[in-house]
Image 1 (cartoon, one colour):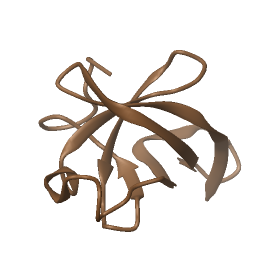
Image 2 (tube, rainbow, N blue to C red):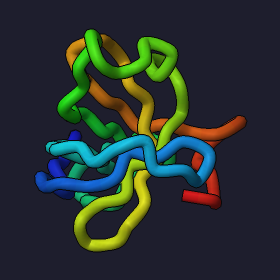
Image 3 (tube, rainbow, N blue to C red):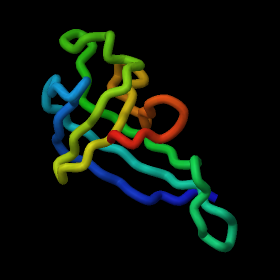
Image 4 (cartoon, helix red, strand yellow):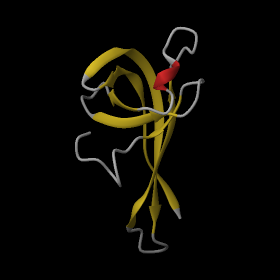
Length: 102
């Protein structure tokens, strides 16, 4: 079973290597895999899907596939990857699993 655990939209900072690239509008949803009737979360089965306002004619195409940081309006930092020219995003991870830096 998969459960929607968060939906978020707003304006934030798109960052790479602790430098702000520009402000972007964002929207995303986070889904968590859950164990049947107990409702306990399954570690490692979290999925983030959404988008940012990405302009392939004005923004660097080198950002597609790169692990970036999205600073949300509420101050949280979210590791993301741009998955295509249309601004689609997915959860970005450093190394073998969830990073501790974002």
